[in-house]
Amino acid sequence: MRQLLVIGIGAGDPEHLTLQAVRAMNEVDAFFHMHKGEQKDQLAQLRRDLCDAHITGSYTWIDVPDPERDRTGPGYEDAVADWHEARAGLYEGLLLDLPEDGVAGILVWGDPALYDSTLRVLDKIVARGKVEFTHRVIPGITAPQVLAAQHAITWNRIGGAVQVTTGRRLAAEGLVADDTIVMLDAHSSFTTVPEDTEIYWGAYLGTPDEILLSGTVGSVGAEISRVRAAAREDKGWIMDTYLLRRP
Image 1 (cartoon, helix red, strand yellow):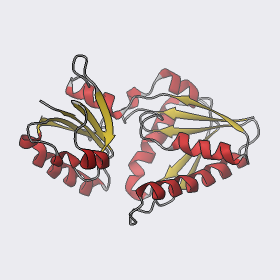
Image 2 (tube, rainbow, N blue to C red):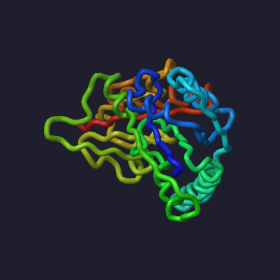
Image 3 (cartoon, rainbow, N blue to C red):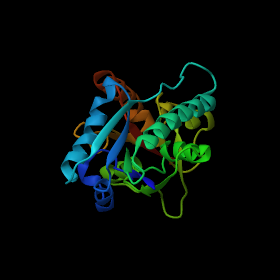
């Protein structure tokens, strides 16, 4: 039966790749990659570099254009659901083209369990029942883990709770926990929290382009917004996360 390995590859540092991930990568005959366009060629190349550095045998690399997500309409969840359906169709076709005893791989930034759609997309393919395959998940180091390490901090205080959320929800709900990790923030939503909140921010974590800033929102928030905008303009994309700590 066909196999699909969903492999977490960490936040960007090649040394964050686990031994388990390296073993799994060497099992793969064909890697499926959703290409996000020229602006994110660097991300695609980082994946290829990991394969070239750690795979001892031969493999096939299959690029397919990632379907566009509708970012103009008001229905965010509906737009994401449509995007996942489109991805499911593409992966389904690739699996059908795989030999019956073939092993495919998908390389996922960070860990497949944290703000990544791959496993939900695979669930849709399984539910359709058009192609039989098994899948296995290999965990990876996440951006919040790297963020904490680079700032030499913990996520939580003694006995405290930690919330992991998105920029969209932070802007809508405010701070819920004493310590809050924020991902997928396209609009610098930290500007909506009290100015005495501590912030530990990082972009391009684990890569040579890594940027780190910390302080209170009142003292460094404007600088983070400025640096973030400049970095995004320069590279055409940005991947960042941060921790907010209430006093």
